Length: 101
Image: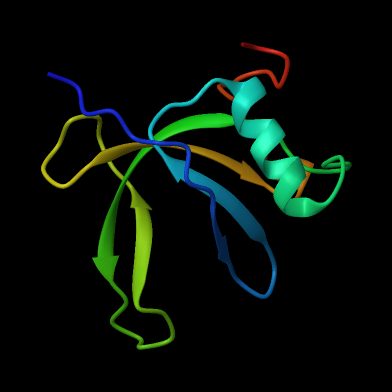
């Protein structure tokens, strides 16, 4: 049975890149609407919405509390997530189109 996750936007970031994500695979339209509300307007220059699987691990460097790293679907500790990156150069061919509902 698949667990349902509410659309709860969080910002993961480094000095180089900002990533908005929410646990769960959400429709691109709902996710973009939430991201634009967080951003205060359109996401001009941002990448595409992606459905990924990741897991959280402690950050050994101590710079962050945890790191969200890629994971194989349904593997131990893995969860589905919906993400978007603040740089279109990070897009991959497997990214979900923004207009997908």
